[in-house]
Image 1: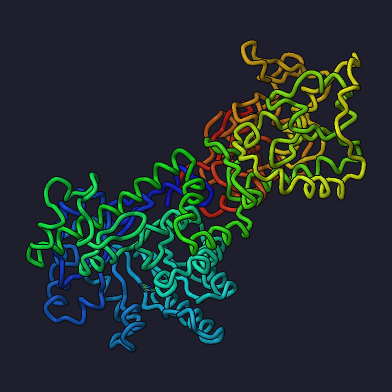
Image 2: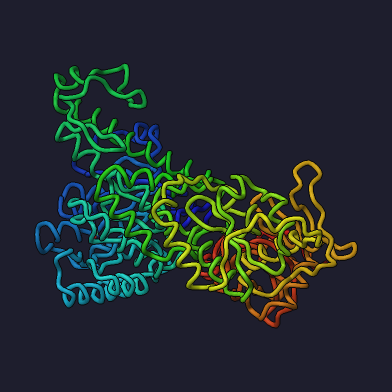
Length: 623
Ligand code: GUN
């Protein structure tokens, strides 16, 4: 699939099937071929792009089977968009053995013209023993091998119960399929075991082929969509919209209410101003089921719409943080998520501010990146000066008094910004420049934080304002660009020398360009990071050991990239696995010759998987 926008592991993507493209994230409503009461117009008016139905139910019902074989599954359920079919695995989990084998049910799905065909995987239950789950993982993989062909889209479910290593192994094995559902999770969702789910999704996702769509099988309740999408789920299926309707339950993104207890439908509902809850209760069962299903499906798609907006504006993480307060089980899941290292998948900066709420914010990816940097920053053997919140008077840029009082090149400066100490030179970079702290933590953690800093650098003192008036020329701006460079390119060497010219904006005083002679080396962006010119790229190529910060492309591609054209995934031969998404990289040949500089659209961990789309947006080529 192709990826267009991202935040963390969440992506806006596109996946093609014989009956059209699917834009992700999205939900496939489950269509029961025996009980198909929403028209394709009604489905599409809500935003449905694709649906899922069950080939096993079709096959075992003679009339449906014949109809499907004769006219195809699209005619059978009257939907002309992409249709995924499931295999009967879930029925065998609920009801015991079923009467068809893997090859047979896969062939049937091909015969009826399904767009996405599911193998007969083995459902792994949360209570399965390790040995049972392991056997299921290998048998499921064998069944994929048995039917996998490049001419169809085959869904190969990742199984493995709650065992992280089995989920990882299954993800690696099933990555040969073209579509990757995560299976065996329905009992966990039903019992609010979201923390286990987070674990399962992360272990599955990080070990699978990133270019393939990931589907959470049975994950149809909107309460957990945002979490799942942030962790890399692209597609959900939902039967809950009917299941709740049957019980007279009205779905909202936050939960459900009983039809008998509500006074009105919300404004966004397709039933608003058309029917009152009382009228619906009095209506015949068929009408009620249809109308409530429509309402419930709309609730589900509202959440998808919101999540997509959130990815575009880079606030999905904030949304998950908000959602985590909706239920204690979600809060636990949120903490579970923070305990995993997802740092490599986050862009160098986000468009949105970073809210510093509470102690769990210390586990935020960007804060972890900053704290790790701080550790390196004060490990350089220089004296470190702590400037307290009061002393720097709550505002960046840091006051000239501080700069005048010490020779900055001889000291590290850590500025207290409520809950965290920040290397002064990073004042204009993300997330420092975009941080909104609550200020509640310094009272609790300040002494511990300072003790931690002292355990790394024992020459730490507090800023002494009486040391003023030194007229030594500060080289603060040079320290600044070099520290930003260190953070951005994970290097401890300096790219910039004191004779480089720093050009600042007259209006804001912010650094704009860095020049050597007449040549621009780099430009400082609004997020406080550097964009390299091709000249800067040459300097970097000479400085960093190969293949750090390189994307290696074919010779043919290199010729185009040298002229300033973007790098496409299919021409990438290799890359530095540590590349941060959105960060500047050098585009080179296998022997290290520079073709261009640009920014990577995905991280080094993902780059090798994608086949379609742009890998590096080139800023400047060498020719
Ligand atoms: N529906 C819900 N869970 C599963 C699963 O694990 N496998 C299949 N094939 N379908 C499902």
